[in-house]
Structure formats: structure tokens, C-alpha cells
Image (cartoon, rainbow, N blue to C red; front, top):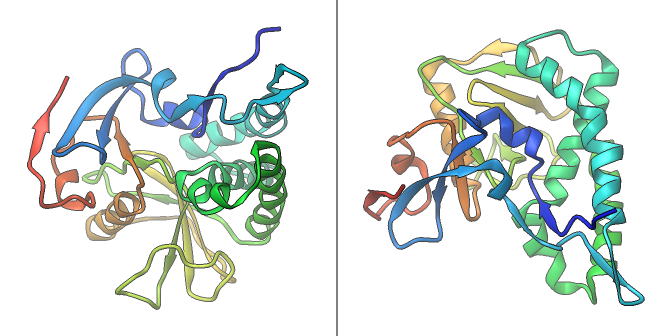
Length: 253
């Protein structure tokens, strides 16, 4: 079987939530001197070469990539589809989604930048990543998750750091709150109109956000990005929310 050398750090089934036409998305890059957007196929978005592939005795081994796909992504696929359709989610659905969200957290650029540089090699990095995956999964599965329907006038983007943790106490610097801390809200967008979320230690209800609240969520998602934000449409309002606010917005197709 062919080794999976091209590895996505955001699952393609998550990316599909923002896809239009033939699996296309609009990518807004933070790595350019000016704000820009490009049409990109999800196959070429949020991926890099061999990040989850190891070298064993001179041969490439993608068993970790296969494990993530077969043990986490595939089992969560139906639950993710149900959440996007607004169907009732049972405990088994949430458990699978929590595992998927934990996977997205430990594959995010923020996580990689924080841990990878201090480790000896890729094998150690992947071992630590898997250990932290289990720890975050347990935290997530012990929370009361719900679905937020965003006001229809607001289009929610997806950043390369899919999991957004927000302190409701630290207004000046709300991002990167500890998952289990009191007054922490964790967000996980699954489409331009729906966000999974919890309030730490509290029961959260499904609700429809106001336009203002939806725009606040949108800003948090953008500010949490490391390198890019994705949308299902050309959204000039992102210029207001993306970190490089002083740059000029230009079109690149």
C-alpha cells in the first residue's frame, strides 16, 4: 500500500464544512505582506509533507497517519454530519467528536510550535502528541458540549488552529485559556453557521447567537490563527478581524 506522504493537520472532513463547488475554499493568508485570498482545493490546504510519517529502518512508516484516520476521523464522520444538519447528538456522538476535536488541537500549529521544538525527534514528538491527545480527550469528554447556531448575517471562518479556548475573565488577553479553568469557553467551528462549544464546568444549551455575539466569535477565531483562515466565500469583513489589520487587502486568484 502506498505511504501517505502528504499529511493534513486539519482533517479534510472538517475542511469540507467550508467547501463550495468542487471542494474549493477561500484561503486568507497571514504570511503575505498584504491581506490576500485565494481559491484552493481542500486537498492542498492545511497539509504538509510527512509530518506524521516516520522512518523505520530506512523505510517510510505512515502507521500513525493511518491510525488517526481509522481510529478517530472515520468514527467521528457521522457524528460531525449529524451536528452540521442540526440533528440530536447522543453521548456516543459527543465522545467521538471530543476525540476528533482533541486530535485537531494536538495537530494545530500552536501546539506544534509549543512542543515540537523541545523534543529530540519525530518519534518522540508523535509519542508525546498521542499522550496529550488522550489527556485532552478526557477533559473534553467531561464537559457539557452544545451547538451554537450563528446569526445568519454572520459567516464563521475556520482558522488553522481549529480549537479556540477563551477566558471570559481576562478581557484584554482572552485567548489560550486552560481548558478546565473556571470561566473558560472552548469553541470549535464546524461550518460557517455552526460552532460546537462548552463553558467549563457548566451545562451549555443549544442557542442561536445574536449578530454581535456571532461577530465576536468570528473575531476570536481569526485572532487565534497562526498562518491562515478559511472561508466559503469572499469575505472582506475579515480584514477587520485578522491580526494584520494595518495591511491593505488585495485580491489574488
